[in-house]
Image (cartoon, rainbow, N blue to C red):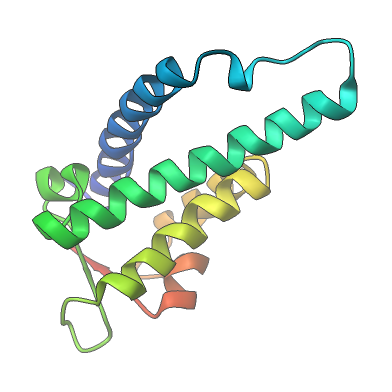
Length: 140
């Protein structure tokens, strides 16, 4: 399997797990994230709250899995390693920064970051923006 497809597969697996965790948490929260339909300002605030919550759930899942199991489920199944420039495992703090940047850029740009990542994946041995910021590399 190619480099690109392994990364996409890993992302889809991790996003599925994150989605399941989010749905369980949203089940407990009940009506906290339901739009009113009458006040646009409150609806925008609810949408921003939802996006911030989604980023926090995604980062928490990834960092907790990295800390306790070495890598999240998607990366483990696809054989992907996140290493620094010396090909050593990065600290949990650096990994948390990497994951926060990834999900923050994805949601803050309303998913315009995804086409950018796609272009970067297609180019051989190029880092995405969130990887350059945390000085990490993907090894398969």
